[in-house]
Image (cartoon, rainbow, N blue to C red):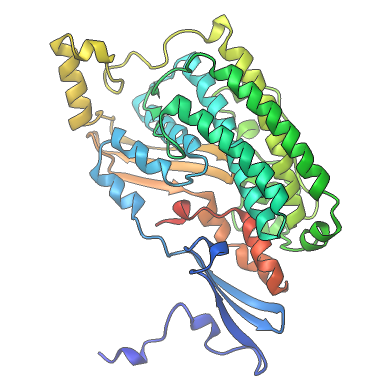
Length: 410
């Protein structure tokens, strides 16, 4: 076959420019601001973007298909690597979906710990997004303030989980381990530092003439566009829609907690910046509530459910009795026998609705796994936010979406 006759599908949209005096350029995937995984093809009239076509298919790990060849437990390190900036939320959303298939209800202590760590992950994710976006605009001082606090949080989470960034801390029916001594005291000290440094960033950035001119009125997304394309999270709330799964379909311990859901006005880059700043404050408020609850008598007790279908025996029992050794061996080698059926379970991740659709045929491995990843959905609307803007608006607009390449993997 003569391959020269086959049109290039990637460039098909721009085979014929709109006008003779325009130019078509590639931005990414080999570009720091596009994370090495996104290609933006833009037709420019001088500095103005007439139209754009965005391709996010430059990360090929085959996550969903790979899941079909591993046990339910062994998938936890895989889901860590979807949104690797807030891996704990991935863990807990996936584990909850499996627990629904098993008909398992987690213990009160596990529920509160998962909620606390989910908010900690949201805080870290927003810090990373804002720091990167400010750095790309040249605000290096604000970048260093936010990244310094974020690194304290990384080290603190590593003291609990034993790993950095990708924690593999969730377990079907519970979590890996309890809080070490002094962990909550250190958390409060970090939150005090967070408040100090984020206060400095507010003073440096919020009313900075350059920052406001670059962000206000750029990357605008209307409410109708956001709803039509299935946007969730900050992308949807920036348009004025107060939608949040923690309020609308409460899970874990969110129904017991007091918090607000910030919304925007214009759906522009500045709204998305300010919503994330506000959501971080709400996460801190939630974490302090949960720290008090975790230390109360109501939250004491076991971490994991007493269900041999999914929970590993204590290590000292594995070494001391044959029944626990066999149970541990079967769970590792064969995996939990999850009843046949299908389920969809979603959590409010920092980027929006993170859902897992699972199908089980009754064996120790999933028959089908699908991840409803917010970053993948939001890439579908990104061209509307870029069209009509300037070349200089592309990087801050793309940064405000907070696309994570691991989520876009298909």
